[in-house]
Image (tube, rainbow, N blue to C red; front, side, top):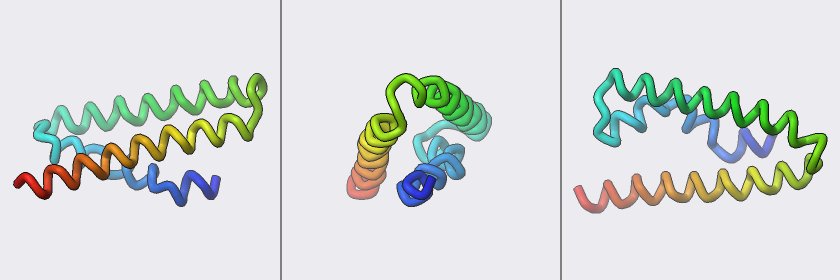
Length: 86
């Protein structure tokens, strides 16, 4: 739980609609996309509940940390690129 809090993914989930608006989506589309992002998180949680018995906690945590790292790196790179090009 602490790793999820420290990774910053909760901040991304909270500001998802704003991030989508910064990506040139209009307000209504941003809200819908944020809703689909939250839905994907729910599906991921349901999948992890199933997988924790199959693969084990450690493997699941390490895999998810790797994927979150890639996602946040991509998000940070996109913010950086948009800042230096505008």
